[in-house]
Picture 1 (cartoon, helix red, strand yellow):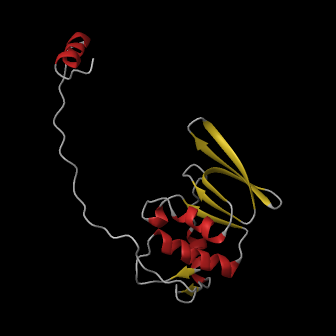
Picture 2 (picture 1 turned 45 degrees about the vertical axis):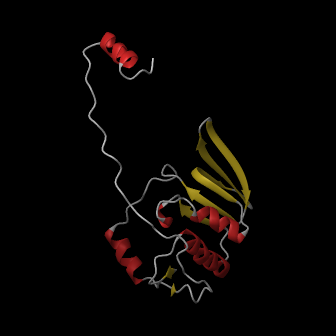
Length: 166
């Protein structure tokens, strides 16, 4: 399903659009990328989970679907964490979840003949409006060049006397 709009939706509008698709289709699992759909903000999946009331597993590096549930494993600072979610659920993926497959030319040609349903936010009952306003973008201050030292003794001397961090 392709949702066409002239406006660039922000994270909340994208989540509302996806909520409309979820209500229409009734999927058991919604899988989203971690960041790309929402301008690299990492918000749309979590917002979709909240709007639909579905449980959510974020940053999935491994997904195992069972009968009425899904186990989502993700990397955390201390190792791995696995959560068991009842279906239907929202899962956002980490880049380690899957090895991409590249379609062959015959399969690309077959896909071109498949019908593609298009809809609009209006048909889904969603108003697309930007709630975030970009005020200004500026480059960071230039950093000064570093200093090379000949040996450890000179490094310790500079850290003590010039930088005063030791």
